[in-house]
Image (cartoon, rainbow, N blue to C red; front, side, top):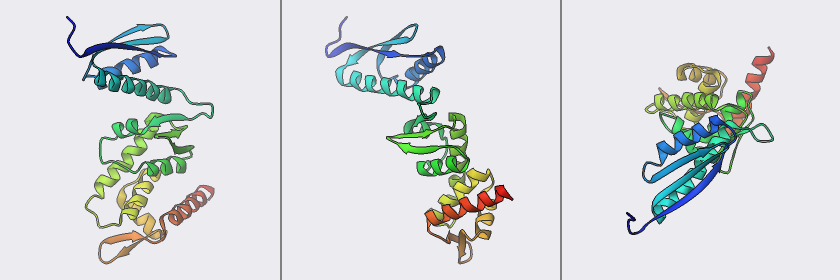
Length: 213
């Protein structure tokens, strides 16, 4: 029986491998629970048939294409060898406190990866598991510093350092204070000893010198 106001629309998504097909289908099931749809598969392609109100179908089609592009970005590097991770994808894999995405990019670069933000994506040659691990360390650091007396930019530098060295925030504070990158103000408060970009440059020099020694 046809329900008044309901329509049927279909789209086709091309896939390169069985792994990609399975990943897309799993994500469709997880994220499109708000609409009736049927997925039909054939070698190299997924056909998705939607049934429901026009505006909801439009949203679901947009989301389905977004899912397909996200999976392609995760599985296949571009001509420059870079994977594309959407901001939504990165946010979804962080189970703790949200983090500044540029901080994730800084950490990836310090660890030797190529990384930059581009059009709502983090473009990097790091695999998703490595991105997830670094993002989780930064998130955990922010959670632990939530009630500590630090300026926001000081917290940013400490969180970055913990992800680079995979160390505790207390060791990070001690190391950064010793390197004159942060300083104590009063009894138990901290701030940056330099402007943030200057602190990044100095930190890069210090880490390079440490590697060379």
